[in-house]
Amino acid sequence: MTASIIEIRGLTKHFPGKNGDVLALDGIDLSIGEGEIFGIIGMSGAGKSTLVRCMNLLEKPSSGKVLFDGKDLASLSKKELYEARRSIGMIFQQFNLLKQRTAIENICFPLEIARMEKAAARRRALELLEVVELGDKANAYPAELSGGQQQRVAIARALANRPKVLLCDEATSALDPATTRSILRLLKDINGKFGITIVIITHEMRVVEEICGKVAILDESRVVESGIVKEIFARPKSSAAKRLFFSAGAAGIGRRSIRIVFDGQSSFEPIVANMVLRFKAPVNIMHADTRDINGLAYGQMLVQLPGDDAAANAMIEHLISRGLSVEEVNGNA
Amino acid sequence: MPDTEVMKFTQMMGFGLLETLYMTLASTAMAYALGLPLGVVLAVTRLDGIAPCRWVSQTLNVIINLLRSVPFLILLIAVQPITRAITGTTLGSSATVVPLIIASAPFIARLVESSLNEVDKGVIEAAAAMGSSPMRIIFRVMIPESKPGLLTGAAIAVTTILSYSAMAGIVGGGGLGAIAINYGLYRYREDIMMVTVVLLVIVVQVLQEVGMRIAKKSDKR
Ligand SMILES: Nc1ncnc2c1ncn2[C@@H]1O[C@H](COP(=O)(O)OP(=O)(O)O)[C@@H](O)[C@H]1O
Ligand SMILES: [Mg+2]
Image (cartoon, rainbow over all chains, first blue to last red; front, top):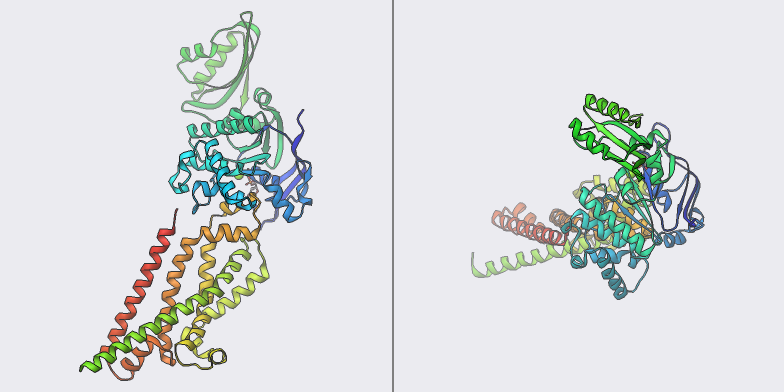
Protein backbone atom coordinates (compact mmCIF):
# COMPACT_ATOMS: atom_id res chain seq x y z
CA MET A 1 0.00 0.00 0.00
CA THR A 2 1.28 3.44 -0.85
CA ALA A 3 0.82 6.35 1.49
CA SER A 4 -1.92 8.71 0.36
CA ILE A 5 -0.88 12.11 -0.90
CA ILE A 6 -4.40 13.50 -1.16
CA GLU A 7 -6.92 12.52 1.45
CA ILE A 8 -10.45 13.84 1.28
CA ARG A 9 -12.85 13.32 4.14
CA GLY A 10 -16.52 14.19 4.24
CA LEU A 11 -16.05 16.97 1.71
CA THR A 12 -19.16 19.01 1.00
CA LYS A 13 -19.44 22.09 -1.15
CA HIS A 14 -22.47 24.19 -1.86
CA PHE A 15 -22.78 27.33 -3.89
CA PRO A 16 -25.39 29.90 -2.95
CA GLY A 17 -27.80 30.38 -5.83
CA LYS A 18 -30.89 32.42 -6.65
CA ASN A 19 -33.15 29.39 -6.22
CA GLY A 20 -31.49 28.05 -3.10
CA ASP A 21 -28.10 26.43 -2.70
CA VAL A 22 -26.53 24.22 -5.33
CA LEU A 23 -24.99 21.18 -3.70
CA ALA A 24 -21.96 20.56 -5.91
CA LEU A 25 -20.22 18.00 -3.67
CA ASP A 26 -21.92 15.82 -1.13
CA GLY A 27 -19.91 13.90 1.44
CA ILE A 28 -16.91 12.98 -0.69
CA ASP A 29 -14.37 10.54 0.76
CA LEU A 30 -11.38 9.86 -1.40
CA SER A 31 -7.85 8.69 -0.93
CA ILE A 32 -5.26 9.12 -3.67
CA GLY A 33 -2.02 7.22 -3.21
CA GLU A 34 1.42 8.60 -3.91
CA GLY A 35 2.55 7.85 -7.48
CA GLU A 36 -0.88 6.78 -8.69
CA ILE A 37 -2.67 7.88 -11.82
CA PHE A 38 -6.10 8.41 -10.41
CA GLY A 39 -9.13 9.07 -12.59
CA ILE A 40 -12.25 10.95 -11.55
CA ILE A 41 -14.95 10.45 -14.10
CA GLY A 42 -18.48 11.76 -14.30
CA MET A 43 -20.99 13.41 -16.55
CA SER A 44 -20.99 17.15 -17.06
CA GLY A 45 -22.19 18.93 -13.93
CA ALA A 46 -21.37 16.00 -11.66
CA GLY A 47 -19.03 18.17 -9.60
CA LYS A 48 -15.65 17.07 -10.99
CA SER A 49 -14.18 20.52 -11.45
CA THR A 50 -15.38 21.62 -8.05
CA LEU A 51 -13.78 18.54 -6.50
CA VAL A 52 -10.43 19.08 -8.17
CA ARG A 53 -10.50 22.79 -7.28
CA CYS A 54 -11.00 21.80 -3.66
CA MET A 55 -7.78 19.79 -3.87
CA ASN A 56 -5.69 22.95 -4.11
CA LEU A 57 -8.22 25.08 -2.29
CA LEU A 58 -9.07 27.24 -5.31
CA GLU A 59 -12.52 26.39 -4.01
CA LYS A 60 -13.11 26.52 -0.28
CA PRO A 61 -14.89 23.42 1.04
CA SER A 62 -18.16 24.12 2.86
CA SER A 63 -17.34 21.30 5.25
CA GLY A 64 -15.01 18.36 5.46
CA LYS A 65 -11.26 18.11 5.11
CA VAL A 66 -8.72 18.09 2.32
CA LEU A 67 -5.35 16.77 3.41
CA PHE A 68 -2.46 17.27 1.05
CA ASP A 69 0.65 15.33 2.05
CA GLY A 70 -0.82 15.09 5.54
CA LYS A 71 -1.47 18.84 5.85
CA ASP A 72 -4.94 20.29 6.17
CA LEU A 73 -4.87 22.98 3.48
CA ALA A 74 -7.65 25.00 5.13
CA SER A 75 -5.55 25.43 8.27
CA LEU A 76 -2.69 27.10 6.42
CA SER A 77 -2.06 30.84 6.37
CA LYS A 78 -2.39 32.56 3.00
CA LYS A 79 1.35 32.56 2.50
CA GLU A 80 1.64 28.89 3.42
CA LEU A 81 -1.20 28.09 1.04
CA TYR A 82 0.53 29.88 -1.87
CA GLU A 83 3.63 27.88 -0.96
CA ALA A 84 1.70 24.59 -0.85
CA ARG A 85 0.09 25.27 -4.22
CA ARG A 86 3.53 25.30 -5.78
CA SER A 87 3.75 21.59 -5.10
CA ILE A 88 0.41 20.96 -6.82
CA GLY A 89 0.57 21.47 -10.58
CA MET A 90 -2.62 21.97 -12.53
CA ILE A 91 -3.59 21.85 -16.19
CA PHE A 92 -6.89 22.75 -17.83
CA GLN A 93 -9.11 22.06 -20.80
CA GLN A 94 -8.41 25.49 -22.30
CA PHE A 95 -4.65 25.31 -21.51
CA ASN A 96 -4.77 28.76 -19.89
CA LEU A 97 -1.38 29.92 -21.06
CA LEU A 98 -0.43 33.57 -20.72
CA LYS A 99 -1.12 34.80 -24.23
CA GLN A 100 1.34 37.67 -24.18
CA ARG A 101 4.22 35.42 -23.16
CA THR A 102 6.23 32.95 -25.23
CA ALA A 103 6.32 29.26 -24.40
CA ILE A 104 9.51 29.58 -22.40
CA GLU A 105 8.28 32.70 -20.60
CA ASN A 106 5.12 30.81 -19.66
CA ILE A 107 7.20 28.05 -18.13
CA CYS A 108 9.28 30.64 -16.29
CA PHE A 109 6.15 32.17 -14.75
CA PRO A 110 5.74 29.75 -11.81
CA LEU A 111 9.49 29.97 -11.24
CA GLU A 112 9.25 33.77 -11.00
CA ILE A 113 6.43 33.31 -8.52
CA ALA A 114 8.70 31.01 -6.53
CA ARG A 115 11.41 33.71 -6.81
CA MET A 116 13.91 31.59 -8.69
CA GLU A 117 16.83 33.47 -10.13
CA LYS A 118 16.30 34.37 -13.80
CA ALA A 119 19.11 32.44 -15.47
CA ALA A 120 18.36 29.33 -13.44
CA ALA A 121 14.68 29.62 -14.32
CA ARG A 122 15.48 29.77 -18.03
CA ARG A 123 17.67 26.73 -17.77
CA ARG A 124 14.95 24.82 -15.96
CA ALA A 125 12.37 25.94 -18.54
CA LEU A 126 14.54 24.73 -21.43
CA GLU A 127 14.98 21.41 -19.69
CA LEU A 128 11.19 21.11 -19.36
CA LEU A 129 10.62 22.03 -22.99
CA GLU A 130 12.76 19.02 -23.83
CA VAL A 131 10.67 16.81 -21.54
CA VAL A 132 7.52 17.80 -23.42
CA GLU A 133 9.33 17.54 -26.77
CA LEU A 134 8.97 21.19 -27.71
CA GLY A 135 12.63 22.19 -27.59
CA ASP A 136 12.26 24.10 -30.88
CA LYS A 137 9.22 26.14 -29.79
CA ALA A 138 10.75 28.08 -26.91
CA ASN A 139 10.05 31.48 -28.45
CA ALA A 140 6.64 30.76 -29.94
CA TYR A 141 3.59 32.53 -28.56
CA PRO A 142 0.55 30.38 -27.63
CA ALA A 143 -1.32 31.71 -30.68
CA GLU A 144 1.38 30.14 -32.85
CA LEU A 145 1.00 26.69 -31.29
CA SER A 146 -1.51 23.91 -31.88
CA GLY A 147 -3.81 22.77 -29.09
CA GLY A 148 -1.65 19.76 -28.33
CA GLN A 149 1.49 21.90 -28.25
CA GLN A 150 -0.18 24.44 -25.97
CA GLN A 151 -1.16 21.67 -23.59
CA ARG A 152 2.45 20.44 -23.61
CA VAL A 153 3.64 23.91 -22.66
CA ALA A 154 1.00 23.96 -19.92
CA ILE A 155 2.26 20.60 -18.66
CA ALA A 156 5.84 21.87 -18.65
CA ARG A 157 4.70 24.96 -16.76
CA ALA A 158 2.83 22.84 -14.23
CA LEU A 159 5.94 20.73 -13.65
CA ALA A 160 8.31 23.69 -13.26
CA ASN A 161 8.32 23.78 -9.48
CA ARG A 162 8.67 19.99 -9.22
CA PRO A 163 5.20 19.36 -7.82
CA LYS A 164 4.19 16.18 -6.06
CA VAL A 165 0.81 16.10 -7.73
CA LEU A 166 -0.46 17.11 -11.14
CA LEU A 167 -4.18 17.87 -11.37
CA CYS A 168 -5.64 17.60 -14.87
CA ASP A 169 -9.13 19.04 -15.33
CA GLU A 170 -10.44 17.77 -18.67
CA ALA A 171 -6.95 18.28 -20.03
CA THR A 172 -7.64 16.40 -23.26
CA SER A 173 -11.27 17.36 -23.82
CA ALA A 174 -10.44 20.08 -26.32
CA LEU A 175 -8.09 17.83 -28.31
CA ASP A 176 -8.61 15.39 -31.16
CA PRO A 177 -8.23 11.64 -30.45
CA ALA A 178 -4.68 11.31 -31.78
CA THR A 179 -3.47 14.35 -29.82
CA THR A 180 -5.34 13.10 -26.76
CA ARG A 181 -3.44 9.85 -26.96
CA SER A 182 -0.09 11.60 -27.26
CA ILE A 183 -0.85 13.84 -24.28
CA LEU A 184 -1.95 10.84 -22.21
CA ARG A 185 1.23 9.03 -23.16
CA LEU A 186 3.24 12.06 -22.05
CA LEU A 187 1.40 12.14 -18.71
CA LYS A 188 2.09 8.46 -18.23
CA ASP A 189 5.80 9.01 -18.99
CA ILE A 190 5.93 11.85 -16.51
CA ASN A 191 4.30 9.69 -13.88
CA GLY A 192 6.82 6.94 -14.53
CA LYS A 193 9.89 9.17 -14.79
CA PHE A 194 9.28 11.58 -11.93
CA GLY A 195 6.89 9.59 -9.78
CA ILE A 196 4.41 12.46 -9.78
CA THR A 197 0.90 11.55 -8.69
CA ILE A 198 -1.56 12.42 -11.42
CA VAL A 199 -5.25 13.14 -10.95
CA ILE A 200 -7.21 12.93 -14.19
CA ILE A 201 -10.63 14.56 -14.35
CA THR A 202 -12.60 13.53 -17.40
CA HIS A 203 -16.00 12.64 -18.78
CA GLU A 204 -14.48 10.20 -21.26
CA MET A 205 -14.12 6.56 -20.38
CA ARG A 206 -11.36 5.98 -22.91
CA VAL A 207 -9.14 8.44 -21.06
CA VAL A 208 -9.51 6.50 -17.82
CA GLU A 209 -9.06 3.23 -19.66
CA GLU A 210 -5.89 4.44 -21.30
CA ILE A 211 -3.88 5.56 -18.31
CA CYS A 212 -5.59 5.38 -14.94
CA GLY A 213 -4.87 2.70 -12.40
CA LYS A 214 -7.68 3.71 -10.10
CA VAL A 215 -10.88 5.58 -10.69
CA ALA A 216 -13.68 7.20 -8.75
CA ILE A 217 -17.03 7.68 -10.39
CA LEU A 218 -18.73 10.91 -9.53
CA ASP A 219 -22.44 11.20 -10.10
CA GLU A 220 -24.74 13.95 -8.89
CA SER A 221 -22.20 15.29 -6.39
CA ARG A 222 -21.33 11.91 -4.87
CA VAL A 223 -18.70 9.26 -5.37
CA VAL A 224 -20.86 6.29 -6.33
CA GLU A 225 -18.09 3.84 -7.01
CA SER A 226 -14.31 3.76 -6.77
CA GLY A 227 -11.46 1.31 -7.03
CA ILE A 228 -9.16 -0.36 -9.52
CA VAL A 229 -10.08 0.51 -13.12
CA LYS A 230 -9.93 -3.08 -14.40
CA GLU A 231 -12.26 -4.32 -11.70
CA ILE A 232 -14.79 -1.58 -12.18
CA PHE A 233 -14.69 -2.13 -15.91
CA ALA A 234 -15.35 -5.80 -15.49
CA ARG A 235 -18.06 -5.46 -12.87
CA PRO A 236 -19.56 -1.99 -12.79
CA LYS A 237 -22.07 -1.76 -9.96
CA SER A 238 -23.50 1.74 -10.16
CA SER A 239 -25.83 2.80 -12.91
CA ALA A 240 -23.60 5.85 -13.42
CA ALA A 241 -20.64 3.61 -14.20
CA LYS A 242 -22.64 1.60 -16.68
CA ARG A 243 -23.92 4.76 -18.30
CA LEU A 244 -20.40 6.11 -18.70
CA PHE A 245 -19.02 2.85 -20.06
CA PHE A 246 -21.76 2.28 -22.55
CA SER A 247 -22.50 5.67 -24.00
CA ALA A 248 -23.15 5.40 -27.71
CA GLY A 249 -19.99 4.89 -29.68
CA ALA A 250 -19.03 4.66 -33.34
CA ALA A 251 -21.30 4.57 -36.39
CA GLY A 252 -23.68 1.62 -36.45
CA ILE A 253 -23.15 0.94 -32.76
CA GLY A 254 -26.25 1.19 -30.60
CA ARG A 255 -26.82 1.84 -26.92
CA ARG A 256 -27.40 -1.81 -25.97
CA SER A 257 -24.52 -3.70 -24.44
CA ILE A 258 -24.00 -7.22 -23.24
CA ARG A 259 -21.62 -9.01 -20.97
CA ILE A 260 -20.46 -12.39 -22.26
CA VAL A 261 -19.14 -14.75 -19.62
CA PHE A 262 -16.74 -17.51 -20.65
CA ASP A 263 -16.64 -20.11 -17.90
CA GLY A 264 -14.72 -22.92 -19.55
CA GLN A 265 -17.81 -24.39 -21.16
CA SER A 266 -16.82 -23.45 -24.68
CA SER A 267 -13.69 -23.78 -26.69
CA PHE A 268 -11.48 -20.75 -27.23
CA GLU A 269 -12.25 -19.29 -30.64
CA PRO A 270 -12.61 -15.81 -32.15
CA ILE A 271 -16.24 -15.78 -31.22
CA VAL A 272 -16.90 -12.08 -31.66
CA ALA A 273 -15.09 -11.85 -34.97
CA ASN A 274 -17.06 -14.82 -36.31
CA MET A 275 -20.31 -13.29 -35.10
CA VAL A 276 -19.59 -9.99 -36.87
CA LEU A 277 -18.84 -11.82 -40.10
CA ARG A 278 -21.98 -13.89 -39.83
CA PHE A 279 -24.43 -11.06 -39.08
CA LYS A 280 -22.59 -8.38 -41.06
CA ALA A 281 -23.17 -5.80 -38.33
CA PRO A 282 -20.55 -3.95 -36.24
CA VAL A 283 -20.00 -4.40 -32.54
CA ASN A 284 -17.70 -2.59 -30.19
CA ILE A 285 -15.60 -4.48 -27.66
CA MET A 286 -15.55 -2.29 -24.55
CA HIS A 287 -13.54 -4.57 -22.40
CA ALA A 288 -12.15 -8.06 -22.71
CA ASP A 289 -10.50 -10.13 -20.06
CA THR A 290 -10.35 -13.65 -21.42
CA ARG A 291 -7.84 -16.45 -21.09
CA ASP A 292 -7.21 -19.60 -22.98
CA ILE A 293 -6.70 -22.45 -20.50
CA ASN A 294 -6.09 -25.76 -22.17
CA GLY A 295 -8.13 -24.71 -25.17
CA LEU A 296 -11.10 -23.57 -23.10
CA ALA A 297 -12.20 -19.95 -22.72
CA TYR A 298 -12.41 -18.26 -19.31
CA GLY A 299 -13.20 -14.68 -18.42
CA GLN A 300 -15.60 -12.09 -19.72
CA MET A 301 -16.14 -9.53 -22.38
CA LEU A 302 -18.25 -6.38 -22.65
CA VAL A 303 -19.65 -5.75 -26.08
CA GLN A 304 -21.75 -2.92 -27.48
CA LEU A 305 -24.29 -4.30 -29.92
CA PRO A 306 -25.26 -2.91 -33.34
CA GLY A 307 -27.84 -0.13 -33.47
CA ASP A 308 -30.01 -2.43 -35.61
CA ASP A 309 -32.20 -4.21 -33.05
CA ALA A 310 -32.90 -7.31 -35.16
CA ALA A 311 -29.18 -7.93 -35.63
CA ALA A 312 -28.57 -7.31 -31.93
CA ASN A 313 -31.21 -9.83 -30.88
CA ALA A 314 -29.95 -12.39 -33.36
CA MET A 315 -26.47 -11.98 -31.93
CA ILE A 316 -27.65 -12.58 -28.39
CA GLU A 317 -29.48 -15.73 -29.46
CA HIS A 318 -26.46 -16.89 -31.37
CA LEU A 319 -24.21 -16.48 -28.34
CA ILE A 320 -26.65 -18.31 -26.06
CA SER A 321 -26.90 -21.14 -28.58
CA ARG A 322 -23.12 -21.42 -28.35
CA GLY A 323 -23.50 -22.19 -24.66
CA LEU A 324 -22.28 -18.82 -23.44
CA SER A 325 -23.83 -16.94 -20.57
CA VAL A 326 -25.04 -13.56 -21.84
CA GLU A 327 -26.31 -10.75 -19.70
CA GLU A 328 -27.69 -7.55 -21.15
CA VAL A 329 -26.30 -4.46 -19.43
CA ASN A 330 -28.63 -1.55 -19.76
CA GLY A 331 -26.55 1.46 -20.62
CA ASN A 332 -29.44 3.82 -20.02
CA ALA A 333 -30.25 2.52 -16.55
CA MET B 1 -1.31 89.17 -45.94
CA PRO B 2 2.05 90.97 -45.54
CA ASP B 3 5.07 88.84 -44.60
CA THR B 4 5.23 89.94 -40.99
CA GLU B 5 1.64 88.99 -40.49
CA VAL B 6 2.25 85.53 -41.98
CA MET B 7 5.13 85.11 -39.57
CA LYS B 8 3.05 86.20 -36.62
CA PHE B 9 0.28 83.86 -37.69
CA THR B 10 2.62 80.91 -38.07
CA GLN B 11 4.17 81.65 -34.70
CA MET B 12 0.80 81.84 -33.04
CA MET B 13 -0.32 78.55 -34.59
CA GLY B 14 2.94 76.82 -33.65
CA PHE B 15 2.66 78.07 -30.10
CA GLY B 16 -0.99 77.01 -29.93
CA LEU B 17 -0.11 73.57 -31.20
CA LEU B 18 2.62 73.18 -28.58
CA GLU B 19 0.27 74.35 -25.85
CA THR B 20 -2.37 71.87 -26.97
CA LEU B 21 0.14 69.04 -26.98
CA TYR B 22 1.45 70.08 -23.59
CA MET B 23 -2.03 70.22 -22.04
CA THR B 24 -3.02 66.93 -23.60
CA LEU B 25 0.05 64.95 -22.73
CA ALA B 26 0.50 66.39 -19.25
CA SER B 27 -3.17 65.76 -18.42
CA THR B 28 -3.08 62.27 -19.88
CA ALA B 29 -0.01 61.36 -17.84
CA MET B 30 -1.47 62.70 -14.61
CA ALA B 31 -4.95 61.33 -15.28
CA TYR B 32 -3.37 57.90 -15.75
CA ALA B 33 -1.50 58.26 -12.48
CA LEU B 34 -4.95 58.47 -10.87
CA GLY B 35 -7.07 56.44 -13.27
CA LEU B 36 -4.82 53.41 -13.64
CA PRO B 37 -4.78 52.45 -9.95
CA LEU B 38 -8.49 53.29 -9.70
CA GLY B 39 -9.23 51.03 -12.66
CA VAL B 40 -7.19 48.25 -11.08
CA VAL B 41 -9.12 48.59 -7.83
CA LEU B 42 -12.40 48.54 -9.76
CA ALA B 43 -11.43 45.40 -11.68
CA VAL B 44 -10.14 43.61 -8.60
CA THR B 45 -12.99 44.42 -6.22
CA ARG B 46 -15.90 43.78 -8.56
CA LEU B 47 -18.14 40.82 -7.84
CA ASP B 48 -16.29 38.55 -10.26
CA GLY B 49 -12.85 40.05 -9.50
CA ILE B 50 -9.96 38.36 -7.74
CA ALA B 51 -10.72 40.06 -4.42
CA PRO B 52 -14.40 41.06 -4.41
CA CYS B 53 -15.22 43.86 -2.00
CA ARG B 54 -18.69 45.23 -2.25
CA TRP B 55 -18.37 48.55 -0.46
CA VAL B 56 -15.15 49.63 -2.15
CA SER B 57 -16.54 48.70 -5.53
CA GLN B 58 -19.86 50.44 -4.98
CA THR B 59 -18.37 53.61 -3.51
CA LEU B 60 -15.96 54.00 -6.41
CA ASN B 61 -18.68 53.26 -8.92
CA VAL B 62 -20.93 55.98 -7.52
CA ILE B 63 -18.16 58.61 -7.54
CA ILE B 64 -17.04 57.71 -11.04
CA ASN B 65 -20.55 57.67 -12.44
CA LEU B 66 -21.25 61.06 -10.88
CA LEU B 67 -18.12 62.65 -12.30
CA ARG B 68 -18.72 61.10 -15.69
CA SER B 69 -22.26 62.33 -15.94
CA VAL B 70 -21.27 66.01 -15.60
CA PRO B 71 -20.67 67.53 -19.08
CA PHE B 72 -17.07 68.66 -19.44
CA LEU B 73 -17.88 72.31 -20.08
CA ILE B 74 -19.84 72.50 -16.84
CA LEU B 75 -17.23 70.60 -14.89
CA LEU B 76 -14.65 73.01 -16.24
CA ILE B 77 -16.45 75.92 -14.62
CA ALA B 78 -17.58 74.04 -11.50
CA VAL B 79 -14.06 73.04 -10.51
CA GLN B 80 -12.62 76.54 -10.95
CA PRO B 81 -12.15 77.00 -7.18
CA ILE B 82 -10.07 73.83 -7.09
CA THR B 83 -8.12 74.92 -10.15
CA ARG B 84 -7.39 78.29 -8.55
CA ALA B 85 -6.34 76.65 -5.31
CA ILE B 86 -3.86 74.43 -7.10
CA THR B 87 -2.45 76.67 -9.87
CA GLY B 88 -3.28 80.13 -8.57
CA THR B 89 -5.28 81.00 -11.70
CA THR B 90 -8.04 79.69 -13.97
CA LEU B 91 -6.49 81.04 -17.15
CA GLY B 92 -3.94 79.49 -19.48
CA SER B 93 -2.94 76.00 -20.39
CA SER B 94 -1.53 74.94 -17.00
CA ALA B 95 -4.80 75.84 -15.31
CA THR B 96 -6.71 73.77 -17.88
CA VAL B 97 -4.75 70.68 -16.89
CA VAL B 98 -6.62 70.51 -13.56
CA PRO B 99 -10.18 70.10 -14.93
CA LEU B 100 -8.83 67.86 -17.66
CA ILE B 101 -7.45 65.48 -15.05
CA ILE B 102 -10.63 65.56 -12.99
CA ALA B 103 -12.74 64.83 -16.06
CA SER B 104 -10.58 62.15 -17.61
CA ALA B 105 -9.34 60.15 -14.62
CA PRO B 106 -12.77 58.49 -14.08
CA PHE B 107 -13.04 57.85 -17.80
CA ILE B 108 -9.59 56.26 -17.79
CA ALA B 109 -10.47 54.20 -14.72
CA ARG B 110 -13.38 52.71 -16.67
CA LEU B 111 -11.21 52.02 -19.72
CA VAL B 112 -8.63 50.30 -17.52
CA GLU B 113 -11.29 48.32 -15.68
CA SER B 114 -12.80 47.00 -18.87
CA SER B 115 -9.39 46.05 -20.31
CA LEU B 116 -8.40 44.19 -17.17
CA ASN B 117 -11.78 42.57 -17.03
CA GLU B 118 -11.19 41.05 -20.42
CA VAL B 119 -8.30 38.94 -19.21
CA ASP B 120 -9.25 35.27 -19.47
CA LYS B 121 -10.53 34.07 -16.08
CA GLY B 122 -8.94 30.69 -16.76
CA VAL B 123 -5.50 32.28 -17.03
CA ILE B 124 -6.02 34.03 -13.69
CA GLU B 125 -7.15 30.76 -12.16
CA ALA B 126 -4.05 29.02 -13.52
CA ALA B 127 -1.86 31.69 -11.94
CA ALA B 128 -3.66 31.30 -8.62
CA ALA B 129 -3.22 27.53 -8.83
CA MET B 130 0.53 28.12 -9.20
CA GLY B 131 0.60 29.94 -5.89
CA SER B 132 0.46 33.57 -7.05
CA SER B 133 -0.71 36.10 -4.49
CA PRO B 134 -3.38 38.60 -5.62
CA MET B 135 -0.69 41.29 -6.00
CA ARG B 136 1.29 39.08 -8.32
CA ILE B 137 -1.80 38.23 -10.28
CA ILE B 138 -2.43 41.94 -10.79
CA PHE B 139 1.09 42.89 -11.78
CA ARG B 140 2.26 39.77 -13.56
CA VAL B 141 -0.92 38.50 -15.14
CA MET B 142 -3.75 41.02 -15.41
CA ILE B 143 -1.76 44.09 -16.45
CA PRO B 144 0.69 42.38 -18.84
CA GLU B 145 -2.04 40.23 -20.38
CA SER B 146 -4.24 43.26 -21.04
CA LYS B 147 -1.43 45.44 -22.39
CA PRO B 148 -2.88 45.70 -25.92
CA GLY B 149 -6.27 46.71 -24.49
CA LEU B 150 -4.65 49.22 -22.15
CA LEU B 151 -2.74 50.78 -25.04
CA THR B 152 -5.85 51.00 -27.21
CA GLY B 153 -7.56 52.65 -24.24
CA ALA B 154 -4.68 55.11 -23.95
CA ALA B 155 -5.08 56.07 -27.60
CA ILE B 156 -8.76 56.73 -27.01
CA ALA B 157 -8.05 58.62 -23.79
CA VAL B 158 -5.44 60.89 -25.35
CA THR B 159 -7.72 61.94 -28.22
CA THR B 160 -10.66 62.51 -25.89
CA ILE B 161 -8.49 64.66 -23.63
CA LEU B 162 -7.28 66.61 -26.64
CA SER B 163 -10.82 67.46 -27.66
CA TYR B 164 -11.64 68.44 -24.06
CA SER B 165 -8.58 70.70 -24.06
CA ALA B 166 -9.89 72.51 -27.14
CA MET B 167 -13.20 73.10 -25.35
CA ALA B 168 -11.34 74.74 -22.50
CA GLY B 169 -10.55 77.63 -24.86
CA ILE B 170 -14.03 78.99 -24.15
CA VAL B 171 -13.23 79.81 -20.53
CA GLY B 172 -9.72 81.07 -21.07
CA GLY B 173 -7.72 77.91 -21.58
CA GLY B 174 -4.83 77.96 -24.02
CA GLY B 175 -3.85 76.12 -27.14
CA LEU B 176 -5.50 75.69 -30.51
CA GLY B 177 -8.96 75.68 -28.95
CA ALA B 178 -8.43 79.18 -27.57
CA ILE B 179 -7.18 80.44 -30.94
CA ALA B 180 -10.20 78.99 -32.72
CA ILE B 181 -12.56 80.68 -30.29
CA ASN B 182 -10.76 84.03 -29.98
CA TYR B 183 -10.21 84.51 -33.72
CA GLY B 184 -12.80 82.31 -35.36
CA LEU B 185 -15.73 83.02 -33.05
CA TYR B 186 -15.14 86.52 -31.65
CA ARG B 187 -13.34 88.11 -34.64
CA TYR B 188 -14.94 86.24 -37.52
CA ARG B 189 -11.57 85.08 -38.82
CA GLU B 190 -12.83 81.95 -40.49
CA ASP B 191 -9.47 81.32 -42.18
CA ILE B 192 -7.77 81.02 -38.80
CA MET B 193 -10.60 78.86 -37.54
CA MET B 194 -10.14 76.50 -40.49
CA VAL B 195 -6.40 76.18 -39.93
CA THR B 196 -6.89 75.28 -36.27
CA VAL B 197 -9.51 72.73 -37.20
CA VAL B 198 -7.18 71.13 -39.74
CA LEU B 199 -4.34 71.12 -37.21
CA LEU B 200 -6.57 69.54 -34.55
CA VAL B 201 -7.73 66.86 -36.95
CA ILE B 202 -4.15 66.05 -37.93
CA VAL B 203 -3.00 65.85 -34.32
CA VAL B 204 -5.92 63.58 -33.36
CA GLN B 205 -5.30 61.32 -36.34
CA VAL B 206 -1.58 61.05 -35.65
CA LEU B 207 -2.07 60.30 -31.95
CA GLN B 208 -4.79 57.78 -32.70
CA GLU B 209 -2.83 56.04 -35.43
CA VAL B 210 0.39 55.84 -33.41
CA GLY B 211 -1.49 54.55 -30.36
CA MET B 212 -3.37 51.89 -32.28
CA ARG B 213 -0.22 50.74 -34.07
CA ILE B 214 1.68 50.33 -30.82
CA ALA B 215 -1.29 48.44 -29.35
CA LYS B 216 -1.53 46.14 -32.32
CA LYS B 217 2.18 45.48 -32.42
CA SER B 218 2.20 44.55 -28.74
CA ASP B 219 -0.58 42.00 -29.12
CA LYS B 220 0.67 38.43 -29.39
CA ARG B 221 -2.71 36.79 -29.48
N1 LIG C 1 -18.92 29.14 -8.84
C1 LIG C 1 -20.08 28.46 -8.87
N2 LIG C 1 -21.23 29.06 -8.48
C2 LIG C 1 -22.40 28.39 -8.51
N3 LIG C 1 -22.54 27.13 -8.91
C3 LIG C 1 -21.45 26.47 -9.32
C4 LIG C 1 -20.17 27.10 -9.33
N4 LIG C 1 -19.25 26.21 -9.78
C5 LIG C 1 -19.94 25.08 -10.05
N5 LIG C 1 -21.25 25.23 -9.76
C6 LIG C 1 -22.30 24.19 -9.90
O1 LIG C 1 -21.84 23.02 -9.28
C7 LIG C 1 -22.16 21.88 -10.05
C8 LIG C 1 -20.93 21.09 -10.41
O2 LIG C 1 -20.14 21.86 -11.30
P1 LIG C 1 -18.73 21.37 -11.81
O3 LIG C 1 -17.88 21.00 -10.65
O4 LIG C 1 -18.20 22.41 -12.72
O5 LIG C 1 -19.11 20.07 -12.65
P2 LIG C 1 -18.27 19.25 -13.72
O6 LIG C 1 -16.88 19.76 -13.72
O7 LIG C 1 -18.38 17.83 -13.28
O8 LIG C 1 -18.94 19.45 -15.03
C9 LIG C 1 -22.94 22.39 -11.25
O9 LIG C 1 -24.31 22.26 -10.96
C10 LIG C 1 -22.55 23.83 -11.34
O10 LIG C 1 -23.58 24.59 -11.91
MG1 LIG D 1 -15.72 20.62 -15.29
